Structures are given as structure tokens and as C-alpha cells.
Image (spheres, rainbow over the protein chains, first blue to last red):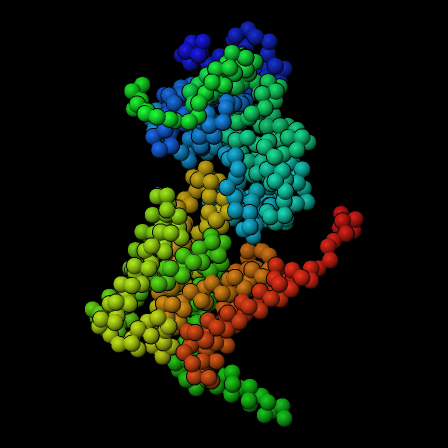
Length: 285
Length: 300
């Protein structure tokens, strides 16, 4: 079973497989197709992996992964702890270099917007919420360029869109964990990236905030951006994310969420052993 | 009555500078160092690298000593030697901490202690105890016109460079992963910053000595943190505090006849202790006598 799925040549698509399609998926897919249709007649891959292996100290965290995220798709990545989900996002964002294989990007998706799992942000730096959001303009401003009044306005709008209006001059330290996560979403919004990577964005966030951030994700999706999100909440994936990649170091299933989240696939992922023990052969694959 | 008071004040605060050229040069040098070093100290503090700064100031010594052994007391040789040694050690230690599992503190400490031993051995093999004292604790009388040019030149370059890399450096302090994800050159900003620190330490070593050079960099910066919240206000306040400490310290060294390096650093230290006790942000006073909290109904 696992073998068959692993070598499935093409990404399974909900509509092609003739499965009942999630209404959100249909709606957004139509929209993203419309935006794409203006640029290109056929669908394009935003990010494509070719036999990708990523490892720490020679021990692979992602092993011989091939496949692609289509432009404008909204995909959840799930799998057990240590399955290489965050590692994969790091590689896409360019922080980690592949050991083997390649990552191909479509021309318009760089730079990526990346929200790491536990943002390694030193919050005792005397910086205001608005300044942190405005750092999302790095590509426009660089180290020395000015922040225009227009950029300032956009940053304020982004703050308001995540429910943080009035927090502009707040210290980073005085925000709660959930508020800070919203702040990082606001920065992602001003970054205006075509490819957005989210690593467990709803950890330590209350239900109301989660709803709000999910709304924002759907808005981005409707705008035709490619969104990849690491999540553990299978119900939420089935409900909100049309596409899903289930991985346990290797690809177990990739395609429409309801296909991927079948019990047999989850069972396969459950048998995954994160630890490397005993003698390990050099991979000849 | 008022006239005599004015005359006394002038005697104490103005005459030393108006009568003696070396005092004027020392003052100019200290003002320049204050303007460029104090902001760097603020970044050292934010990067949690104040101890690394200390290590770097010691690391300059072997370069200065080698130049002294080869060419005697020569401004340009000693400055050049100190610069090369400091930059080399900053780069090696920076590279070790970036590309190996050793953290910054460990790699810096490992290298600077070797450098300090090497420097002291070289001076004492060739020079006198006085030479060693001047190297370690500074000598205001040594500040002549060429070294003043050197100090002000370094200060100008350093302030301008810091202005260019300022935003990148703040982001590298605050959120290095983000900077990496937008292809910002965090490593480059960090290296440039380390070079500026070394440049300033070398420039300051004539007035303050290699062991005291860090004082005017760190003390005003950590004092400013107790008074204001915003980074820009901290930058301004740290420079002002450094200037105040320089002026009072120089006058103290003139009137009481003590070495200028330690007296400037001691005044800066006094400002720090005062800030620690009665500052507005997180001082001892603020801890035991907190200001009343806001009433939310009134503010929203």
C-alpha cells in the first residue's frame, strides 16, 4: 500500500479523482484558476521537489521526496513528530540546503513568506509592534531605504486586519503569545509573498484567534497565493485545507485531503520511527 | 559675591581646557569616542555580547605589543597592529561561533585569553612596566594632533557605517530567521558591526587603555536602558551620558591628578549605579515603589 502510494506518479487531485469536493476547495480553486487563467493557460507548479533529501548530521529528516505544490494551492502538511515537516519548510524558505536532489521554484514565488514554529525572536529588543510589521517591507526598503507613508498605512491596515488596531506603539514584550502570533501574521500580510509557509501557526492560540487567522489564510488563498501549512489537527485539515501532504520522513500520501487522511495512510504514518538506532547503511537509493 | 562664584566655577570647569592643549585634545578625543562608541555599546548589550566586547578589547593587545616591539612607540604602527589583531580575532571567533557548535562566549574567551597572554609577554620581554601600564590603562598626554585625527576619523566612519546597517543590525538582533528568509545579509551586518567595535576599541585605547576602552562603550549604554524605552531615545541618551562622563572624568583626573582612563570610566560607572538605583525603567526604586497602574476604563 505504502509502496504504491509512494510511487504514484502524479499528485492526486480531488476533482480528477472524482471524489466529493470540499465547498471551500471548489470555491477557492475556481478563483485561483481564474487568476491564473489571466497569466497562463495551464496550471503551474509553484514549488517542485526532485528526489529531495534533507538531513541533520547525515541522518535524513526528509528522504527522497518528489512532488509539487501547485500554484495557488492551499496545502496542509501533517505527520508524526520528527517526520521532517518543519525541515521541509526550512528548505523551501532557503534556510536549510538540500543534501541531495533539488527544489525548483516558479519564477514569481520568490521571496517566500515564512512563519517559523517558535519564532526565534528576541522580544526584549526595544521595538514597537508597528516597526516589526514594517520589517515585512524588507524587500522594498532594505537596510537603508525609507519606509514611506504608504507603507506605514499598509502596516497599520495589516495590524487592524488581525485585530491589533491600537497596538501600534506597543512593546513586543507586552504582547501575549497569541497576540504576537497575530502580529507575525500581519507582517506576513505586508510581505505580500506569493508563497507562504506556516509552521504550526495555531499552537498556543485561542479558538477565536484561530478562526480569525484561518479567515486571513482563506483570503490569501482566494488571492491566488500558494500556502503551505504544517498542522496536527486532522479535523481542521479536512475542514479547511483542500490539499494535504502526509509524510513520515518519506512521502506517504499527497493529494486531496479526504484521500490522504484515510485510516490506512494514517496507520502507515503511525508506524514511523523517528530515532536512528544501531548500524545505519549509507543510502544507495 | 556672584562674580567670585562665577570665577571659581570657571576655574574648576573651563580653565583646565582653556589653558592646556593636551586637555583640549583629550576632550575632543573623548567627545568623538562618546558619539561613536556608546551606540555600539547599546548593540553589544542587545546582542548579549558585552562580555565578548570585553574579550575583544583584550585581544587588541598582542597586535599593539608586536608593533611596539618592532617599531617602538609609534602611533601608526601600534594602531595598525591593534586593528589587525582585533579584526583577525573578531573574524576567527565570529566564524567559529557561526559555523561550529561552540557558542560565541566560549569561542571568544578561548581566543582572547591566549591573545592577552601573548601581548603581556611580548611587552614585558622588550619594554618597561610603565609601557605596560600605558597600554593597559591609557595615557591622555599621548593624544597628539595625529592621533586626534585618527580618533575623529574612526568616529566619523563608525557613525556613518552604523547608520547604513542600522535597520539590518536591529533585525539581526531581533529576528535573524526572518532576515534569512527574506535573503537579508544578517551575517554580513554582524561582521561589519564587530569590525566597528574593534575600530572603536583601537581608537579609544590611547586615551583609555586596552583594559578601559570598553568602559565608555558599555556603561553609558546600560545606564540609558534604565531611563528610556525606545531604541532611538536610548541611542541619544547613551551618547549624552558618555559625553557627561568624559567631561567630568577628565576634570577629575586634572584636579585630583589621577590617570584619565580609570577616572572617566569611574564617573561612567557612577552614572550607571545611579541609574540602577533610581532609573525609571526596572531600577531598584521602580521595583520597590512601582507607579500606580492604569485604570482601563479611563484609557480605553
